[in-house]
Image (cartoon, rainbow, N blue to C red):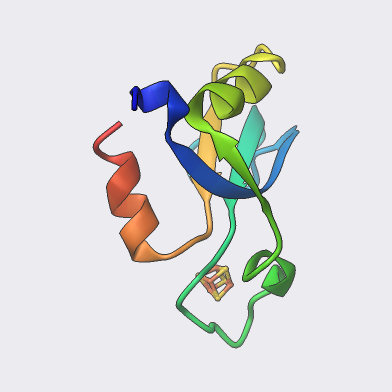
Length: 88
Ligand code: SF4
């Protein structure tokens, strides 16, 4: 299986304005992964704990590229998935 055929469960991919960090105020594409093993009492994205669709890395890259935006944030999901992304 090639890397582009590997799949992740994606809650949503959308374009908005970055609201945090030194990138605040810049256009950004957000890739929200499904699942999170934390339960922060201030969480406002509980819908992302379980809802999502399987997408290949190729599909994810195509969806992100369609926004033609150089700033991309991968958000949510467990620490396990975040570690996986460091290997991409
Ligand atoms: S999605 Fe974010 S805010 Fe919500 S529980 Fe997980 S880490 Fe906390």
